[in-house]
Image (cartoon, rainbow, N blue to C red; front, side, top):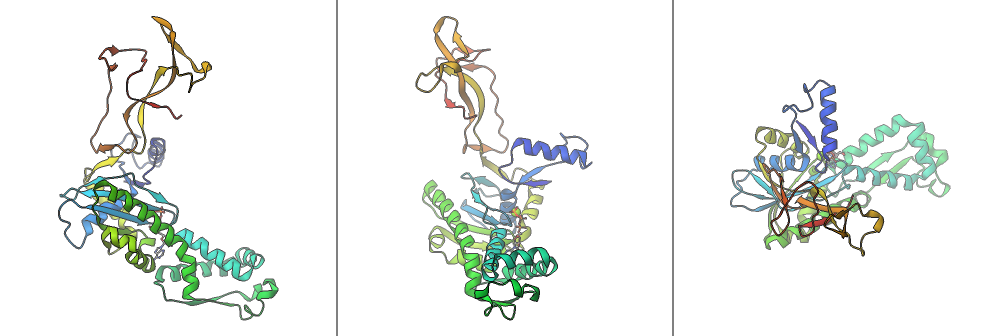
Length: 355
Ligand SMILES: Nc1ncnc2c1ncn2[C@@H]1O[C@H](COP(=O)(O)OP(=O)(O)OP(=O)(O)O)[C@@H](O)[C@H]1O
Ligand SMILES: [Mg+2]
């Protein structure tokens, strides 16, 4: 089972198959023994299987996976029987826990000056690595009130900016709870606005609240983030309850096992891309250049075509059943005439090819 990001292209899947074959994990690239599972779907399956309460009816549920690099949202309807139907295209951003780490590094560089900061990183790396570990534990435990004292190596004293000499004389920095908030808040705010935008989309579907919002992922286990989400007035208005799991950091791994046992648990997905075949359409002097003309109508050479149309099988955001398949054999125009070989689509559903 390979758990992959939701936007993965078919080429990326193929590369993973090829790598797994080379590594001897599967006997050939087409092997059924390698299954792919999307991260947000895995997170969602862990949530519904591990809920400490019974979900009744067919409510809307939102799953928020806050990891190290990314935050992924998945909005679905529970259709009884522990199966899910994706309701909108999931969104996400790059405001995971490593953005908080980056904020902390900025805070430190600001406190001790760029020169001392660079020197600290590169000439006392052992001490710097210890500081990172200490930061990791302070970040993980932060719930809004903790403060701590950060100890710097004495070797840096001569590099501190003169205006900071008095403040840093003991090579200590007092990191107050307000400092910690100023480091975490910008990231928390980004996550909350991402969630609010998706909740607004959810409300537009049927006007109803999202019944449960599940928070998972490593960063999702942070008490400060969780309390902020629970206390946010927009979330309170649009969500029944915010729910956490017992071990939220490994939810994706456990959910992938549920998917492996039954890959029909995600009954419906939203198409990430428009899929179709390239067709020719009539030349349009307003949109096309004459150099793009590639063919003409043998019965009427004044009618010319450009290869810029797409005959869609499915469009981005369409609902697609887990077992859907799309085939097109003969094509016909709106008047029912069967078209074969060269396809000059004029009256069919066309979208513009984006390349
Ligand atoms: N309690 C916590 N508070 C804040 N951050 C935390 C906490 N616990 C773990 N993290 C951070 O969460 C990250 C790991 O979470 P997770 O395993 O969900 O990420 P990931 O799945 O590897 O990342 P991504 O989903 O972005 O690919 C690390 O950056 C870690 O520092
Ligand atoms: Mg993750």
